[in-house]
Structures are given as C-alpha cells and as structure tokens.
Image (cartoon, rainbow, N blue to C red; front, side, top):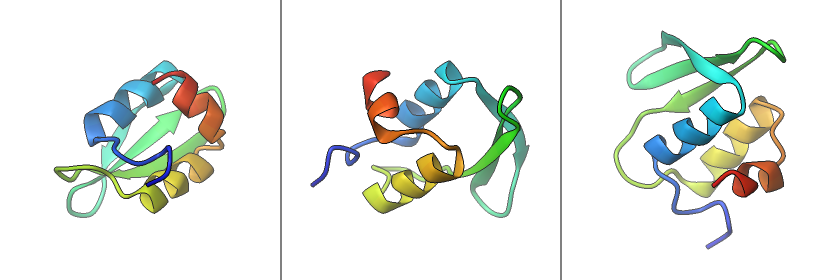
Length: 75
C-alpha cells in the first residue's frame, strides 16, 4: 500500500476544495466533474463507496495538476 491509499471520496473532496476546486456538474453514472477557476483545470472524480484505488487517485491528481506531496500535506 502506498501513501495515497486509504482515501475515501469525502476525504478527497475536502482536500480538492482547499485547493480551489468546486463541483461543476454530474457526469456519467456516479462520476462528477470538478473545476478549478484559478487554473482552468477539470478533473473527474468517481463517487463510489469505500477507499479510492491508489491508481485512480494518482490519475485524479495528474489530471488536476496537483503534486501528490501537496495533496498529502493538506490531509
């Protein structure tokens, strides 16, 4: 297990809000699109129960141009 494992949807959303992201719209199924007005970047977040797979969280952070260290620092 890596350092980015064990995060739930709610934990991720809290940190993204601190970084300036806000809910933009509902996407297909249980996915949501979040937008950062400062950077102009979008990211897609699955709203599933349980822990987010580490690879999925890494993809979210990459899409949002967030360094994993910055993300973990706001934990």
